Image (cartoon, rainbow, N blue to C red; front, side, top):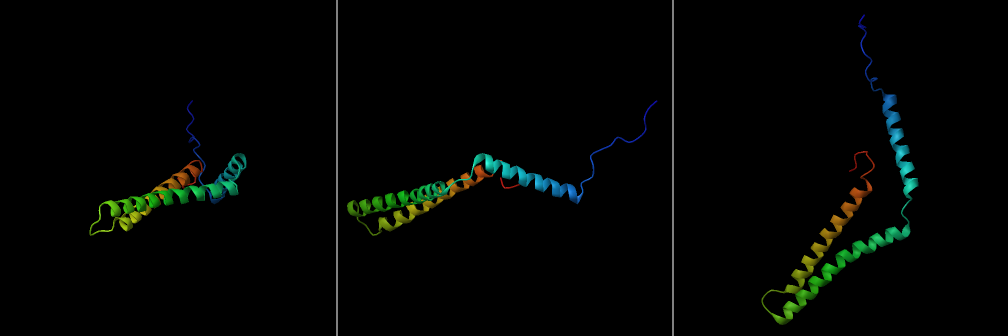
Length: 115
């Protein structure tokens, strides 16, 4: 004899189950943070130093190349200022790309929509 009763499907989502899911996600993030450890002050200082040098080096290289060009090939245009700004722009873009990559890596395992 065949059973004509409907098969039970997934339970409908209630506000309580949504709350339980959010609490579970927060608990999982806390457990992950305890397992991986919190970055310390030295990590933050190292990151600031890395970002600072990634901006300063292209800026100084652009200024040095501009000074060399102005000295060896004088003309109507000042290369020093133009290449200093170009180096600063390149350094800022490089630092922004690195920080964005670090942010993506930091949030890759969250699963809460930050990726």
